Length: 476
Image (cartoon, rainbow, N blue to C red; front, side, top):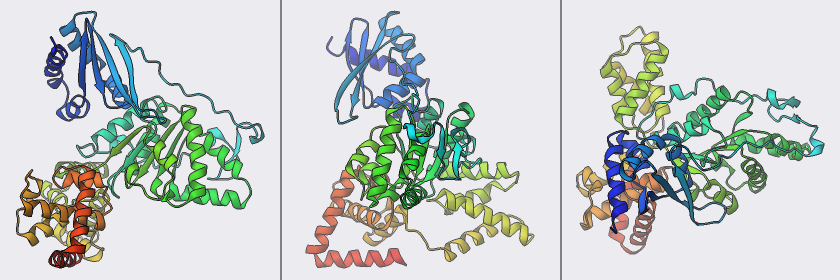
């Protein structure tokens, strides 16, 4: 039967679908393509090496049970893994004989330091020269743990990958693990949670968190003091290196060059790199291409704006941790009005508690609304993708949900393109994030929309006037 592999895999999926959460099924099983069945071997194609790693780690039991049911007790599973690392693009097969795995696991290898580095005594740019490796402060905030990180649809893939890295740092395909999102959505928290988990599980490993600006300043200082090699040797000794806001390397050629050498050394010796940014690698500007290509070697995980249920969970966790009782409807008021930024959401809760304590007022919806109004009035209001969509829809006199509908109606398509244009120019959101929130489109569609709007601005005076009027409304 030509379609025997499709039938076998569909029967497996019927069982798997009932035994894993729906979001996990969509993330890890829907992208799989069955290729062929040869006797008792089913061959499936997965889109990247990290898929293979994760399926093996998390779902090997359910895969073996379902496949044995379909192909017998001697069933085997062969993966065709799409490889795109180190300039190679192609298919690499792995065969799994149930139970167990045939793939050899990467191992952490010892770093060989140059002989003039003084053994394992190094110059530590964080404290003073001469601190031993085992005494390096990881620079982690103890509160930023996995237990304090609220999981939702907006961050589930990133969190799952983070747990896998923490369990086996340097030993998964998630290397580097590249976390990206708008500001205030939890990427720093998640990156530090990984570091804390690694230190708990592997106390002997050297973990270090540093933001990109601090790294750059340390490098400049090392050049000024003529100890560039000490700086390099220090970072080459780290087992798990976490660089926050790596987009701040943009335009700093010498900093990028030194980080390129550190990255290569750590990656080649089986050490773990975790990077965060406000944009995915493909959208980073002012970065060397050789560095960008390395950022793509592992997994790039998007962390999006939390939905209402996740925002409620974040507030409840914060209240529980602080040992405070707040009425459910008050939490709902906060979660309804503060939608784009977890940091602002937690700030509003702290402000509400302060107002209640200092003024001896009961925590009510009225007090919550006063706090929200004051925060909005006293802070520079940040334009969000949702606000842009509302203003654009009001201007073109269409319903908000029409932007999400698949249609070729000219007025809907143009409104969607205008919303994408302003989202790109007035927010820090990535093209992928913009597309996902406006019609479920990809980044290429957003780029095309922006180009179309720019062309119309140059050629159509009436359209250009419309753009100016919308821009005024957005800046009010």
